[in-house]
Image (cartoon, rainbow, N blue to C red):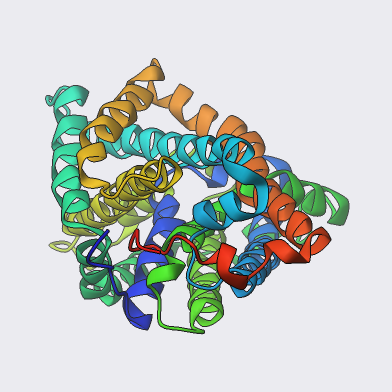
Length: 376
């Protein structure tokens, strides 16, 4: 890390938003729709800004106490190398689990929806190979790619949603409160891990413009709220609730509804670049974050030699699930409900409480003894 990366505001917003929002192309909605029925969109309308806001406030509080340090380096100052080593192991497990399971889902969807003859192993290796190259170039290259295609993704995503307007039925949202306010709150509480991808900020904020972490996080939360809520809302408008809860790939099914006349139908292939770019950016960011976290935890001066090992572990996670329904279930019910909240909310909260209890560990020469560039 001799050459410290630098991310601009727009690049950082695009990068973090990609990492959070890419799940709109997968099956994140299943547990939400099952729990809240026709009120599922309301769950996301309060879950993303509230859960994302709480996580952002926690990360910003840590950054202010340890300016210039990532959460791994700040954790070593606060908790010491041994306890922080356990925390770092949790961070790495989170990035590997999220990246590996989403890689499997993206690959399976491409195979099932577009190229049925392709072996899933070929799709996985193709995706991870391209992401490997991007991760090796570093977080700056990934962030600039995300920035380049950010509005293209938004326009394509909006085109899918608005292209189904002729199939919308407002009566499908009734009863408006779904299974009731209590069920809505419970569903949101157990699925708070949906916004845990915002934790990427804790790894990259040493590379952000000074004082911009909060602004980047708020912008990412706004974009994420709009995208995640809009997809579930349009899904419920276009399909009856009993059908919507059985759809495993909502963005793909909605794209198949787009009808522009006799010669303007079955246009889902036009949106393949949108899905592919989102998959590559998200996978590359996850690979880089895992490799960077390991290098900081082990006090290694470089992270690039760790990328091949991280790629192997990610592919192992991707193929650990016997099939795509298992990958969806592991992602939604294990990673998002158990691992993600404990790692992304619990560990930073512990570090913040320890630093508050022992003010001498916040700031000062000890806190800055090892900068992100690896120099004293």
